[in-house]
Image 1 (tube, rainbow, N blue to C red):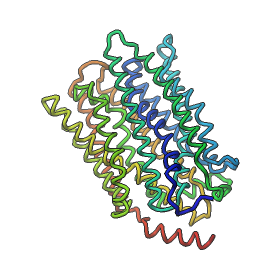
Image 2 (cartoon, rainbow, N blue to C red):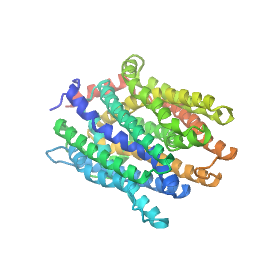
Image 3 (cartoon, rainbow, N blue to C red):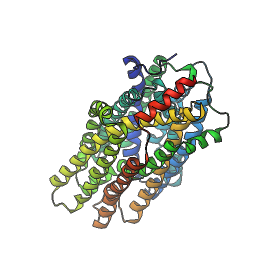
Image 4 (cartoon, helix red, strand yellow):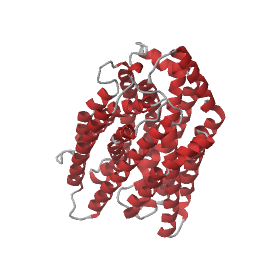
Length: 456
């Protein structure tokens, strides 16, 4: 049995965080490069890709609750989380390879269909890993602050994988600018290497981690009741609303970074370094945020990180009105660095708060349904992302965007409004609601944990 309040051993923490490196690599490459790869290399219309990404994220959001509930209900001796993590590596490999290896003979509608199926397949497959993996993090420790450390290490791993994907993205962009380059062949080779490494990481993780057997068979057989319980939980309800608003603001940042760097800053070669300027403080700041969360409280610090993210990207709105490339780059690097620091805070504290809310559900229902909770919260994240990706694709299409050509000021204003003002508005609103409405802090968590232990 796993001790409920004991500090997770270092080996457990590392084993938990390691597969996040592969997930971070794949997620960032999908988020930042696939849209540009499709429009500029495969020559698929932006509106088509926007619709494909929107459909994929909405379908992915629907599949998340299914994966979460099945994970909660799994009773295999190997574990209800590790079983699904292990099974995920094959479909992840096929989906990721298909995205970056479309047959060269395909064109037109057949290529559109291939990319839609490939993207849908990848996001569905990664769900089989991601939802149980996040749920397992909430189970490895029930201590209020230890969870922040576990999810902080996961965030560091995810960010390191994202940084590695920047290297691949830099190679791909260089290949695009090489008259004799073969972007499709390079993308296919990089994808093959990535799925091999990700598979090894999953094997290592599931072989080292252990699950708490006391948590098995503690979920209602009715899936609709499980998700109704989530909405009935008042703290989960506020969290869902805040996360939906937050992700409406954050969804466009990833997909538009390369567009903003190339067509507004007019320095496409700097894109990997700008993203690196975001990723590095995101990882390095985690050890700072963990002790600060003990001192100031997880909720206050999370509110601060949301506000800082909004301000960081809101300031980027001025870039089209600056005359020199150097001035634009300074603003981009400053916004990226501040936004990265804020992301380090949210990446560690956000999932930890979700784990606390799951404890409150146990107080209300006596059940342990981490999978259903993380699936429901992922549903919110991906639904918001799907909506904004659809909007982004149509804004690009109908603002007059032309791939690989200088853009008009109207197109630049449309792009920078999505990239700067939308995050400013939505992150600020999310910070306000979290500060005003979320009332489940450390004292409240300690009180309900005491009552749960007394029942036991």
